[in-house]
Image (cartoon, rainbow, N blue to C red):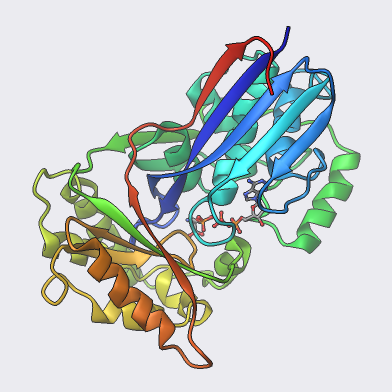
Length: 351
Ligand SMILES: Nc1ncnc2c1ncn2[C@@H]1O[C@H](COP(=O)(O)OP(=O)(O)O)[C@@H](O)[C@H]1O
Ligand SMILES: N[C@@H](CCOP(=O)(O)O)C(=O)O
């Protein structure tokens, strides 16, 4: 008799303009993982993205192995067959690494029969992905604000590729060989799910190049002028409520999605970003509510209530008109989903 677990984790758009490392929206684009325990064969299966299928290297399985080892299990129950179907594009600012970490924690919880609460799962996610915005939204769903209690992460913890350079990964790997496994302290992440009008959809324009979150974070300055911090705090406070109004106020939201903390420092990594942010507004683009970089980029997120395809066309044209032949893009119109990550258990023969 086998048991199959179907794990579903949504993509996320983090920051939403001023909420750097704070805000996240979960979107109707999914990473799915199917794990079958006590099948006839031990094997790591399909991964559409061409990522490593070595369980000690792949972010989903590395995360699961970390959580299992925190519970005294050094490996997956044997044999475990894992099939990954990833529809979230990598390195585009749609939370692929956050989704992989969340999936890994759910995978360990399922195959190890750990019965972790979502709050405890968030602790594990935050030991690996150091900013809470993506993982909190992917785990619980909807429009989510979160903060993190500072913790010591030295020791034997896998690091999300999104946050560590390859050099740092090698250093961490060397440290891990010699250190004790580090359990997360309890309650290191706190979140609230905020209201978001059902009229709002996410127009996502996804450039056909990858930008590692680690690179986009390395572009940020070490300190900020107080006027820029205040600029973001003012907008963020308004944004938390403005998106929840049944009839959203376009100009209120448009201004509330402006940012001076991360986008200005990342613009050289995303050709066309300044022009896109400066060109489209609710007067010249009906239906538009606000526009920003999705996560660390390069995807552009436009929140809108109408004229989705026209909004997408305008943004795509700016990318297409960049020097040296322009930048190819894909367009996805996504819903903001209120359900976060889930895992369904099915007893019986599988695959
Ligand atoms: N489904 C997945 N399985 C394994 N690793 C993944 C998966 N999704 C993302 N990753 C890892 O996360 C990296 C991308 O993370 P990051 O630079 O933060 O971009 P993103 O904005 O997409 O989260 C990938 O290069 C890969 O190493
Ligand atoms: N707050 C983070 C969010 C990164 O999101 P991702 O989807 O690009 O991984 C940041 O802006 O660095």
